[in-house]
Every structure is written in structure tokens, then in C-alpha cells.
Length: 231
Image 1 (tube, rainbow, N blue to C red):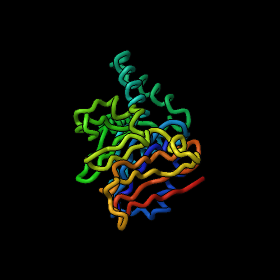
Image 2: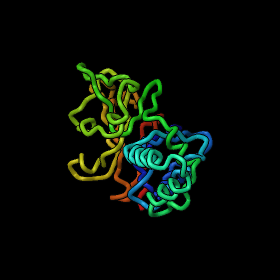
Image 3: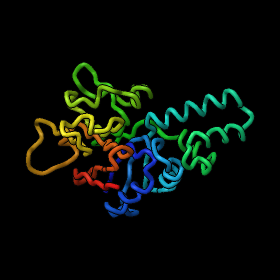
Image 4: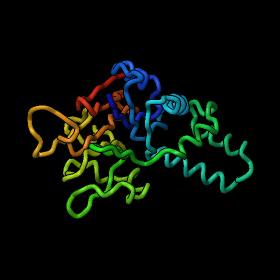
């Protein structure tokens, strides 16, 4: 099975709880849509865990991008003093920053800003639409558009004729009338009512606001079911 999650935000134990709840195994695949870090005290532990999972794939969100911009700035200021740079990078994470090593920094820098498959596309915040309401080719979008987009989350934004887009960035509790923390799956108008496959949806909003709500969810591509754990 393929599970997609977003905005874990350093909730290390909650993420382990989610893996247990879905009985995640070596035959499964995990895709993270960014914002693994910040707002919790387990940023580096979580990065190291996911980096070492052979069946995990990740993209950078706005928080990883912010960290990398900070890192690039330090390198411009102290291009030859790697010890000072690493010391400051460790201080960036007040919870477990002392665990940060260069291999994790290099891994973050190597991550893409989108993952595209035959039937779905994973971004962090959103993707621009063309004049016909179709998602543009992700390689033509800027990093800033992919990690900072504030419009795509709107329920009024419908992606027409394109593959399903999975994204996070903004807690769904800000969108749902009842303020609940659950994944929102937007079904295509023309999709059949019986059965369920990923192509029946035009976008999946994944951010359950784990650092606020204590709820972390993921979406299974094959079953189109959401799975949740709570602190």
C-alpha cells in the first residue's frame, strides 16, 4: 500500500503510533508531503528515522525550505568554517538539535519539491492552475509556489482534468465548518458513486494540524481511506 502524510511537524512519537496503526511494512510505501520539522521537539529524530526508511519518499515543505535558506545564508557568511555552521544549525532545533549531522542536512538539500506518479501528484502547499483550471506541469512551478501557495487550499479551487493533487500546509480545521482535524478528499463531479479509486478525486487535503490537534492522519492511495491516530 502507498500512504501519503503531510505536516508531521516533529511529532515523533505520534508518527510511530501512525505507522503502528496502519501496520506499515517493508512492502508498503510512505510519501511525506513536507513539513516534517519544527513546532515539536522531535525534528531531527524524525528526519533521521524517515531518511533511513528505504520505502519512504519525501518532498520539502516550507519549513524545510526555510531551514535550507538559513543554512545557505550561513554558508555564505562562513563558507570554510563547517564546525560553526553545524553548531548554528543544531541550535535551529531546540528540542533535539544536538543530534543533527551533515548527512541529514545533505539529505534535506537533495529532496525534491514534488513527487509525480501516473495517477497523482504530491506537493506541499499547492500548484498553480492554468486558464482552464488544470494543474500546470510541476516542473514549471517555482519552489515558492509549491511550498507557500495559500489559494489551493480553498474548497472553491477545483482542479479540472488533471491527476489528483495531494497536499498539506494549512490545517484542515481552518477549512472545515466544524473545525475538526480530518483529511478532506474532494471528489470529481463526474466520478461514479460506487467504488473508489484515486482518480475519482481531484485533490486531497492532508494537514490534520498534528502539532495543534494531536491528530495525525494519512491517506492510502489504493483504498482511498484515511487513517488517524491521536495523542
